[in-house]
Image 1 (cartoon, each protein chain N blue to C red):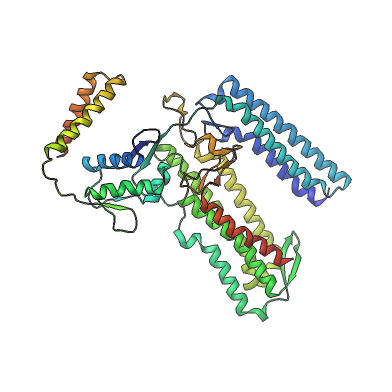
Image 2 (image 1 turned 30 degrees about the vertical axis):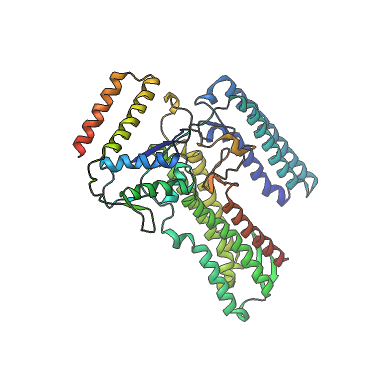
Length: 354
Length: 129
């Protein structure tokens, strides 16, 4: 079995398992991104939709695994990435089909809104200093590179395998700018996401036990993002400040192991909590007679159930309707401003490294 | 301490926000010196435009309830007791109360229950004075 097969097999299986479980992980009044009555997922129509959806997911994932094995057996190098993208597209199609089947049962969410007259609890321990730490580390690396330019090694590693660096670039100003732009863009995106999920998010529930559960979910999301940001900033910082460290397989494998463990544990935690902490929130609300709340946003603002577009909503980030985590409000001009600022930087960084 | 609004109501949202906060101010749940959440935060929680919450805060500031000079949020002021209401003000208020009572009865609330609720509210206001 070649390396691509070994690398992609866990990803394909993980995607299949995640999509299989997702109907149980969303908020109770959201069913394939459609607002429904409480208890709909347990009625005959709801269980039939879920059963058909899960059958599609199982078949798609099985085909993807089979194709991957075929690619490994016949050494077809281009097939594994095609298989992964094909699986994603097919899983997306399964979701859209289930959503179409659910739409006849859609209800309007409640128009009632509640808010606490108190400041939000902090999700970032240490506040702004901690949130901007990865960017500061990168700035420090850039400054150190400028001051110690002639002391830096002639070649800098940009990609690592299990046995150490396996791709290098020459130490030129353009390459260094490329590394700073590339890393800076990725870290800036993550730091903006940290700020957004902390300060510019549309909370679904603002009072009671459900609000406390939602806060825990948001806080874990922020911690995961911060962990990734700090770890992403380390290789470039070490390249400049401690060049020998990045050439050591032990150091970089430890870095990779910490990243992987941290991400897996956090993602497992988020899945366990359910979207927005909905699985932590306490007794099922089926007995309450008030209209369904869903995510308190109208279905019409969710394009294909995946993209939220609402210029009247001040939130920049809101909870995904299908999946775990948050997405942008593409109707908010600030979301596009961030994309317009960061994507060109990312692309410029990649181009400068070629 | 929560406030509640209904985005489907014909009452303008800024007025609903101002009315809900005013209830807390009159009851004494919000004491002088306490800070209200920043405009942005309250707007995000209610799902309304920032200007809507800002207008509600300005309304309450105009009535002497809030100090908006600080950079973050609004601070509750110790409001001077208003003079006795003019007869026109009291008449206009009684007119609105009649309209509200009529709407409540049209929605099926019995006059006895309505009177009971009004008496309980009057008692609370007297105690809070």
